[in-house]
Amino acid sequence: MKISNLFKFSSLCISFLFFSLSSIAFVMLIYNGLILLLIFPILACILKDTRVSKDFKKGFEIFPLLTFLFLLAVRADLFVVVSSLLLASISAKFVLSNDPKDYFEIFVVGLMLSLLSSIGTIAFGFGIVAIFFLISSFFFLIQTQFKNSIPLKKSAPDKKDIFIYIATSLLFSLILFFSLPRFTLGVIHGNPIGAKATSNFSEDVSIDSNPITLDYSIVMRIEKNKQNMPLYISGLRYTTFLNGKWYKSEQKEKVYPDLLGVFLERTMKKATIYLEPNNTNVIFMVDYARGIYGNFNLIYKDNIGNLFFETPFFKTVKYDSFFEDFPLKEKLSNEDLKRYLDVRGVNPQIIELANSISKNSSKQTDKLNAILNYLKTSNEYSLNPTARNIDDFMLNHASGYCEHFATAFVILARASNIPARLVSGFVTTEWNDTLKYYIVRAKDAHTWAEVYMNNAWVRIDPTPPSQTQVSKISLFADSIRMFWYKNFVTYNVESQVRLFSNIQETFTNFGKNTLNLVEVLRSNIYSVLIIGLLILVSSLIKKRKRNQIDIITKKIINLIGNDKSENETILEFAKRKRKDKELQILLNLYYEYRFGKKYWLKDAISKMIKDFQSQKSLLTN
Image (cartoon, rainbow, N blue to C red):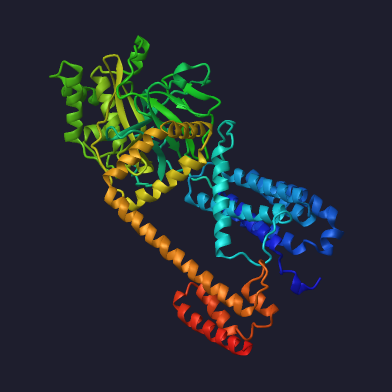
């Protein structure tokens, strides 16, 4: 085989290359270095139908295995190993195969690559790659499965055909996507390669002078009725404060969905949380939570109610948080009350400070208000705190951020004989009005307090409020990402049931909807008449143009002869009758007029036809 012919790929090779490229683009969303896999399909196209592919058939058969063993030997990541194995497999099969069944297996393996990479990324690029994959898959299947059974044109398709192919492909793919049965196989934790933790949330709460840098990365999105601002999302609750640090409970038990009713409580208000990858396995819930619901095998719960996933996630995970607008009533034991009044290790001067703040107050609410007022007037909020520790913050009125304020409040409350604890999580005021959801960013990480009043834990936030403006362009861009993730990435059997229910409701209320539509049309009758008139005029103009084209076409055919077959074009008919040179100018104008839509050529064409008809009449006479 000549070297010059190596890169003259057939249409089959080109469709395979585009299909492989779209499959590789999926895994590149997880690991950019996998672009090197493109060498596999390129080599497959070069070597297909050559003597090399025939003489070394066994070598191509074991090529995927050799690739797999090599990557294991160099200790490549499992995601890289599996992706490379699948690409090597479809490339080797393409070289060796000519059977439509084998090509369909290539399509299935390429589909597996797309599924492998769909780890729940909310990246907008995933949607673009998915569309590219759908189109390339359609052309690959047409080329390999239907070419022999469908009389495709030998020439390249025109713009109209390409548009029809793409539109049909997308429509067919969307129908399959939304209608195929969905099965729930449990939550996949995703692949850690390239996973970026977006959360500033930390399980360790220490009081020090480290500054805070605002990070605008999105931590989660929360679908919820916009009721009040701000929205508190709790993560962890702490009981013990020693040596300038808060400690959470290390006692955890496994909780299964079928054993703990509150875990699956679904009768309260619901917020759907789309949680981005982060450095913790803490389960975040809308404050005053009652329970969660998600596709989890089990979760962990500690002795003060904090919930945890089995392991941290490296993909966006979706679950529902059920809540109320008021705290849950619960009776604490004497032992629990002692834990929430514990002031061991607290500086005696701070105990005296608490007594002086609340000495004129007898009621709990009065004491709490006095403490809040003291912190508000005595301390300044700053992301670059001057407070070296909690003593410096409280006794020397040094500046600090939310952890300083919340810790000081809890200590002062406990010293005033009010059970209190620390809560860490997020607080957001950013609302996306396009798709009705909250956006929670890393900068929204926050710490506040809870006090035990009237047999319930009541939230109190002693930190001065702050609010950040976000551009409308940023909100609009995130709406697109949220729409993609909500309607495609996390589309499951529950979404499918909801979709079919909406369709059924639409048909059920068809009569009512029709009457409403008629009423709308009646109330806008003049607008409807004008639109209808414009459509009618446009239709008549197009019909007139078609009639004129048909008349001119018939006249040109009559000039050439009277035995044109249905499958012949006018140019082919003229060549067969050996009149193509004689009528060359007329035919060129005709094609410009008809297919180039240059309708102003009509008069020139009509004049030329009359001239040819006159010449033909003179020759006949």
